[in-house]
Every structure is written in C-alpha cells, then in structure tokens.
Length: 328
Image: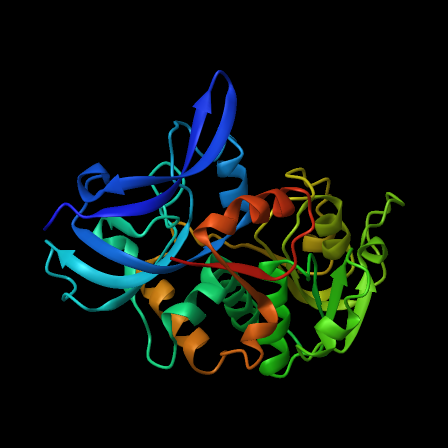
C-alpha cells in the first residue's frame, strides 16, 4: 500500500531520561505483520503510562509508541483473515509493550492479534472498555463459572478502569456489589453504576495477622493485589471464589493455606494478554450484548493525541478515575 504519513506519540530515551513527543511516521516505519489498521480510537491504561515513563519492565527498548488498546478499520490484510473496511479491536499479546501500540494513526500487527468488532458496539465504545473492560469481563466470567452466591461481591480498586467495569457488569446481571475505593466523594459515581455499598479501602486492608477473618464475601474481584487481596481471601465465605488481575498495591501475597483447605476458597488468576482466542471473542460478544453497560459515558474522558502527556502524568500520580480514551 501507499507509504502514508501519519501522527504518533513516541517515547524516546535520551541520556537516561525519557521524552514524549508527537512525531510524523510512515507506513514503512511500522513493524512486520499481516494486518494494517487505520486506528480511530485507543485508550490509556496504567501499563501505557508505565511504558511512557520508561519502565523497562513493560517496554525494553526505546524509541517506542505505547498503547495496548486500539480499535480501527482494516486497510490491508495479507493473511486473508479480514477484508478491507472490517472494523476490529486489538488488545493483548505484545501490542503496545515491545511492539509499537495504539497511540498512532496506523498500526501493523499479526492478524491473530485482532478480533472483529461485535455487533451493537461502536469503535469508540470498544475503547471505553478496552483492556480494562475486557479484563473485568474475564473476571466476571470466572465468578459465574464458580457459581458463587450473588448476595455480597467485593470489588477492590473499584474506581479504576477494571474495577469500575466489574462493578457495573456485576450490578447489571443481578449481583449485589460492595465497591472498595480510596477515592473520596465517589459514592454518586458508584450509585450511578448500580453499586449498593461503597466502603473505604482501609476496611479491606487488615493488618491483624490473623490466619482467617470473619466470613463476609461470597466472591471477590480484586484488581490491586498485596495485602488487600490477602484480606479479601481471608474474609471470603465457604466455597467462595476470588479473582486476581493486578498488583498496583503489591505483587506480594502473604497468605496461609487455611482459606483454601478450611473454607474451600478458589483463587483465579486473570490474564487478558495471552487469553485464548475463543474466550476472547466470547467475552467481547458478552460485552456488546448481555453485559453492555448502560452508563458508558460515565466511565470515559475523551482526549486527542496531543493531550495524552498530561493524562499520563495524572495516571502516574494516582489521580485518574474511569477511562481515558484517545481519538486519533
């Protein structure tokens, strides 16, 4: 195809410091791959903010264009999987980590990294969900598989992207949700999502050292890890289930075996990166139909590529709420 010029956010390492700027790229600059997509929307995730700040645990080599989410229109597919004009979503795999990501107007990737946009979902809506909504959907899917009672489900880190969507999806399908958050003044936000109970995260951060805590939760979707996850597991009811998808609080899990051998608790790890294609497609179909959130605009702030720098700094400072979507 024609060697089109386009805009991209590039992060460069100069003398050990990392600089972000909008540059002009060409199609020929893109990495190898079968599928070329004209990106219409992307979204900002915590992993993107880390990559944009030079975190070598996320991105090893610079210059680099972050963005682990993208939604757009197929321009060319040498694999024959998609037709020109098909609308697709890209999340997971190495996209935006060590392969240039969605903060640019064109991307080139392996065709297997994309899924077709489901009916009843726009490109913009798909990026309001993005990896965060997709991860939340996988977490809900595990609770459904575990067949936990719906009476009292805890969601930790509830004001973040994954937590917000987990709250909204659970409430929509009939679960009674308790949202744990460190954000003050968030009650209206959660009530608007259908959440019945909002508590301070300190209430689920036990430091007593006890082996087990009083049974409280039928199930838990944890997004933060660390001692909050430990506390949640210890307080989960007999035969309950806990999902784990994040480590922003800590990657350490200081735990004993008693919740598992005395209460039969199940702990499920949630991985949205290498998730099998069949489950990936099923989750997106659920997001576009039975689990589609009515209050999508409540989750999102829309910005342009030129506005991303401030949003990245805001997220790194812990001041982000909901989703930031990027219109390209």
